[in-house]
Length: 333
Image 1: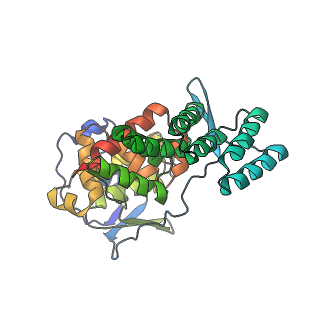
Image 2 (image 1 turned 90 degrees about the vertical axis):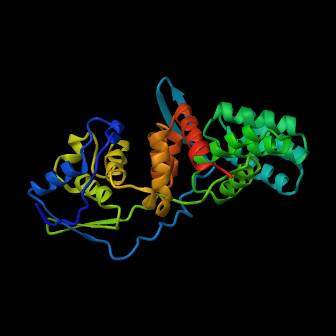
């Protein structure tokens, strides 16, 4: 049952085309009212600060293997000999001795052809020598061998920018951003390339305003104005016995289904005023109109908190997110 309800009447239209088996906010409240658990709803007194994502950055140390529909991600393994050659190559690179660095990297590939990250470094050695054609060739080779190599996409984007192929540059830097969502250097490169394409992208994050707590079996749900519908769904998924399993998920694992159900609570009360207040609301509506809500959820909600999850996304899904970012986030100046 609910001890205290602070709830605005919700208006419903066609937003349930998002998914047919999701509960409406009024249904969510009914479940809470009839629950054996006591739920307490109250206004969040202070705005929740945005988490610090500075350490949520992917390293250039992973590759994946595709076997049919199965994607498996692994960390590169290094033998003592490969490690020694890597140190030598890095020393040559730091000395701007591109030729010797490249020759040493090639020796690594001769020893272990699965050291795909080395292909990106070889591309860099050619770029140091202003040989953009060969650099581009090696970056593309790295991407073909290991699509999740964000550095290869990033550096290829820079090659395209230098060549004046701005649309291709925007595509590649956006993919790099998806593969390493919080990397500040990629963000800067992305902003620069978008500017050349007469696009602007604001650096905001999805920052839901709610808190959940459990004390002696009583659930406290605190929410910011405009976030009640989101908060109550999160409460049910986490605390209501059997609810998450009934909905095909688990209480704590990420689920696009859970997010869609929570977003319905926002969409139901959203208006031009709240869209202006919350950029995540405005982009959500645009994504819904463009039938890109899944891409919105992955880019805005999943990847900032779990950037490594990008490595488990198919190339098709990543390209779909890329289209979302360019169309919705990359606003025309």
